[in-house]
Length: 369
Image (cartoon, rainbow, N blue to C red; front, side, top):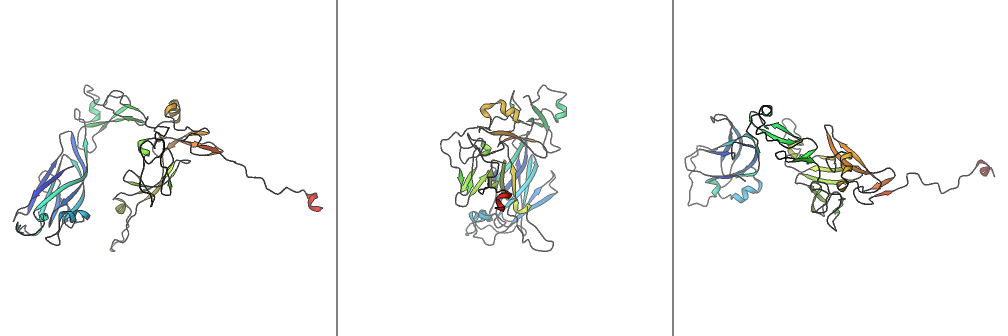
């Protein structure tokens, strides 16, 4: 969390603030900032000379009695402004320009809010990137492996996220996970637990079934990424992280219904007609997504029987692919069986053939009698 306060003075129009990354290996990537105060514009200074400011937002106050708590409730430009700032540099420079000529007298004896005398900058969240600096690029590491950081087997080098930032990072190869910076740090996916650890688990969130391998609490899901949060039982509000609302789970076909609940949905899916007011607002994109239980091939999964997900008799392993890559494997009941292949005896048989007619077939001779 970053926070910074600037005390404003009478007859001073312009104020500046810098936020520096914690060291040479770090880069400020992205931040959402809440800025409180009254009657000023906010600019991001984009070059070292300070000659190219980009306006981010402005804050105004309808009266002198507005409090910071009230302003922060909506943070919509009245006493508070919320901004998303792509930084991609080691320093974020902001400039605050008072409206008018900055000649507003700050009366300490009056009942005016502190918003008129102080600019407060706080982060809602921020992304700070880091990289290894012993070599400027991955290509240069081939000439000098003395201090090469990617020492694990099945690891690879990746150049810095944003040019012209120098340095590199290490990643595990596709299908591997772990720490590429230590010996044997990258391994195949071992995160799936085929058996529920807790004796009793809730399996419904309102009207939505939550079958294993998913769960609503620790010990009830097969892995961390399958642990969901039932935020409201009455409205069947089932969340995956804080970003997605889950509408259904289908273990037979390896599908999950999700709806985007992030702040960006209204901008991504809102529609605008030229020279008309904004009358459409996005409510989130709904989609059915495929899921896999582990980033392994079926052959790899079956070689580790203690972690193999398809525990039911009459179940089988299937690969899950995206348009770009192999994702992992999932389980399905074999032909003639249905149910949950992820639990013991979860696949139950059903009759593939239609039931015979209750009426006895009659021959032509019967009909002529």
